[in-house]
Each structure stands twice: as structure tokens, then as C-alpha cells.
Length: 263
Image (cartoon, rainbow, N blue to C red):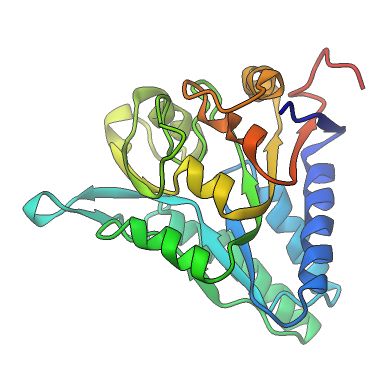
């Protein structure tokens, strides 16, 4: 189905809107764990910042479980893979600790509340176990999604990813790796960007999320906006189109990404 975009003036306005949705669903769930599917990188930072502001105002985030979408992996012994060092600035686990959990902890300390403590990441030794763990917990309550600028990757799902893909090891194409050079400026040469990642699959996203929210912000997301809004169903050459097959799907974009689109 086509996902009709909601257009906002700024990324901050998107962040505030998504944070309110998360807090409303979080409150409705009571004391049960609330699984929040999270990307690393620039796109979702306004959401995390908005949640931290609300936590500072006294909103309780203690039941949040931060479920990361992916992480870089590098070859290990016996042709297996291991995740990159969490202390590396491009580590997705490190991002979760520094850019999601740490601001929540600071906000909770100021408000006298309890911060969330659980961060989940897929294990490259047993990628399929991630889907099992998510399913056993009742699924992702809200999954935040973003689209790659030039190739439409979502998480690390590459163009050509089959619709039934579960959590898996992905070989990262040049377009994805170049996009990530913009996300992590310390990647000054393409060869510095890891060539593999462990990632949730597009079926993981569609089948195991109750609500999916895709965010697109900035002029560099205009192609992604065109592709996602035109899609009626999943298109393997642009994996972010999986949003069209998600339950309770929404697309939030800023004016820069949606230029020329009527309100």
C-alpha cells in the first residue's frame, strides 16, 4: 500500500512527533517491557533528543528496551565474524550507549526517575536468534526506520534483499558504505568502512513490528522520498520500501526532503 507522508518543517518537529507517539504507546503498555527498534546514525538523533527532553521533564522511560537494527562486523577466526569494538565511534552498540542511553541516563538523573538499561544487538554467530528473541518478547512495539540516500538500504539490507529475509550477515555494497562515510566522518577513505554487517531482515521489520515509522529529513533524502512514496509493495532494489508492507506504517518527512510535494 502507498504510505502517505506527513510533512514537518524541521527534523526537530519530526523528533517531537515521533517521541510523543512512543511515549503514548509506552504509557499504554504499563510496566511491561516496551521494545523500541532503533537505527544508529543521523536520521533518528532528533527522536532520541526529544525523548531525552521529555525524560528530563519526568516521563518514565525505564521500561524501554533499545533494540538496535544492526552493527558492523569484521572477519574473525575460522571465517566467522565478530562485531566491531564497541568503543569505535562507528560501532552501533557504542552509538546506542553514547547517543541513546547516556542522554536518557542524564535526563533521568535530573528528573529522579529510572533510565532504561537494556540494549539488544544481533549476534553475528547466531543471527537467526535475534528474530527468535524479538518474537518471544512479543515483537517490536515501535520500529524507527530510515532509508539510505542513494541505494535505499534499510538497516544493512542491501538492494536485492529478498522479501523473506530474517536477521543475517550482509555484504555491504559501495553505495551503502559511501552513505556511511557521511554518517561517520572519521571514515575518510572508502576502504576504512567495514564490508559486512549483521542486520535485521526486511521480514524481521515487517513481521515483528506493531508500528513502523520511517523518517526522511534533508535534501539528500529526496530520492528516497520519491521511491518510498511511490511504492505499493516491497521493491527489492530499494529495501526501504518495506515500510509499505508494515502494520500501522507512517512516513514522516521534513520540507527539505519533500520539496515540491503538495501538502
